[in-house]
Length: 169
Image 1: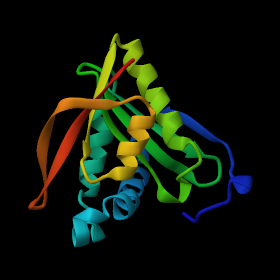
Image 2 (image 1 turned 60 degrees about the vertical axis):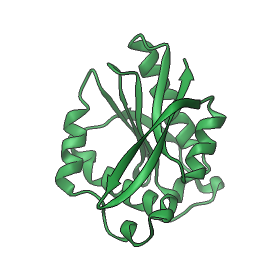
Image 3 (image 1 turned 90 degrees about the vertical axis):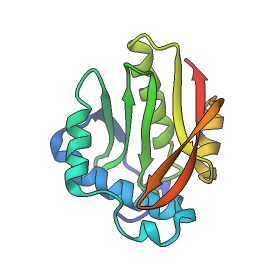
Image 4 (image 1 turned 135 degrees about the vertical axis):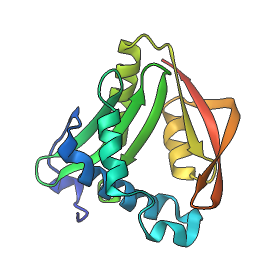
């Protein structure tokens, strides 16, 4: 995907993901982490997950869970979000870096919040890497605040502290 000026931007629509979206979701994740997770160094130079992992992600997000994709009329899937409605968790949100700054992340986040509200959630939570300053800024602008806890995740031997953020819906 090449970066386009906003004047050249075609409209983006949101829809539920289907199995055939898994390869595009994989490409978006890999591109986004190469840019946004540079604090992981060389680890992000290669994919962190296999194609089969992405197939499973899509398959695991059938209702009641939600996996939405943002689709550009020209380039196809350019972003995605996933929520776990039973836990009220905002699980994933990624936009291809070539589409950053176009409001796609905000649209996906709003749709994710709508799905959580529709499931009866009054509060959403998520985990974000403490070094991911861009994501922390996006979530703060959307009304997320520190939730008072954290967890440690492991990415191929590299431990990452993730902060729990919460938002009233």
